[in-house]
Image (spheres, rainbow, N blue to C red):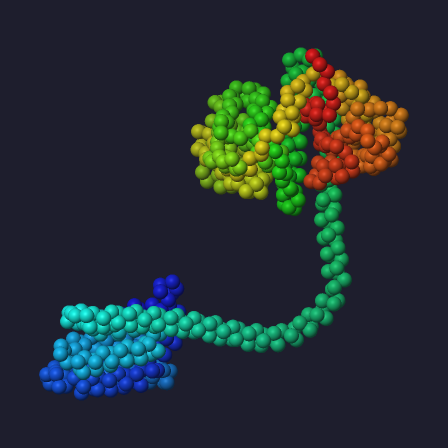
Length: 630
């Protein structure tokens, strides 16, 4: 019963010790005066209704009220005695008191039934006013225990309403309505009083705890003050060392960024020569063994480049320097290009590579096509790598499609070796693969899926895997994209790409200081039908531009004497205004975040990173140069 009556917070919080004790104290501290007053009212009511009530009934009721009164006084006395003597707190006296208050409410209800007699108007009024005063006066005394107050007043008042309705007649019906409204008002008032009281108590105890904490903190701070003075003197002696350590850390961070940029440039430059030479070699006449050797070398070089790209991407993500583009692109076309690009790898293993694209997929979306290509490429290459027979199926599903946005699910399913369930949770962690033998057998850094996961999260999506050993795997991600409108420009671009298949026309200036890259790029350009002049640095490039007319410039960025940025700025400053702008395209081994923006700010018109693939270079130049008619 005590637990029921102590539910002071409408069940939204657990009862707290200090607040509970204080609520009980408030009720019992006012117990002497309130119970004496209630007993006097009981005696007064007995005297007022004596003319119409049998003496035995009246004496029995009054005796019951007297017994309850005395037990409540004894419970209050016991409670305060334990409190003053600091005895261990027991709830026995509290439970007795609450139960007696509950019985007192029942006795008042019994009194209403016994004393409210028909045709005894004065006695009826006496019962009504005493019950009304009793229930109203109990609000400040019993409202700390809200449910106890409800039980105390509902018994007499509800019986009052029942008797009035039993008598019938307009007068008694109106009186019953008044009593109901009065009861609801008392309940509302008691509820508000209790809520305010509980809030005030909780705030008081919180303030007390805060004051205690502040006092303790003040004492601790005084104790620490002496230690701080000593520590301050010691810190002054080491301040110069800390400053030097900070400067060294900042220098190390700058050195790391510079090292990554230089490493990227220095590795990409020879990689451009290796991949470019192998591409040129593929266009020559070779026997079967030579073709296999070239394919093996090219595949190995691409694997090395993929590792380099993973390391750079991972470093950029860790440093929060990777930014996503928001430009129109065709996911349908991107998926088709990847299937075409990777079909040779699948065919080499006798694996079917299949694409299924939902017809509801919009033609153009807004997002970062480069990073979407990276996500799909990782899924597809992993599926091909770990599948020895069967198929790899790429699916693009529209989960929801609206005029302005589309929710997509991209899946890559394979029939490969599968992944144990206990290993799946670690797949998207850095430097992690299914098991140690995977790295030895299939290669890789274990960074690919970790990077893909970060990219998907940066795009606001989610990613996962479903797999069973021996029955294949399904890697998936769900992404939300805005739909981009099909503009006349995009239609013209698609038409231009479709037409850009023949030989290119034009006179190109190649600005490149590396001998191998000069040879590779020159061979690629002449193979596309272009006339090529060579300049080994920015100064020679400016001289050539002053003497000859060119249709396009391929500009390396890092060169001796005068680099590509300075040469481009110098040429743009002297370029005739009002004429046709000469396209300058950066072809550089700088592939870190911000390098493209730096090229465009210098006055260049486009950008391609080394190592350069012939197909990508051909596609880029086809956007700037005319194509020979068939």
